[in-house]
Image (cartoon, rainbow, N blue to C red; front, side):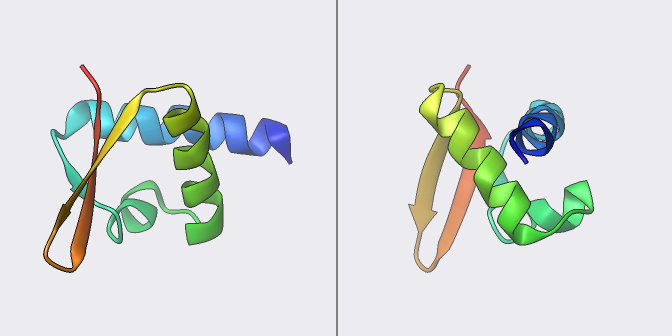
Length: 66
């Protein structure tokens, strides 16, 4: 499973690289993968200090730290 999460982290990173900011709920649709795997990949990236989260009202957005 770790390899799959790592691969998904790469895919999420590439997707975030193309967009400045993405609503957290839209990201699984954009990468065409199950929510649980995408959120695990985001955790991986967050632990490495590569993503930023922003809350606006009841929506959460994610972006790369540049």
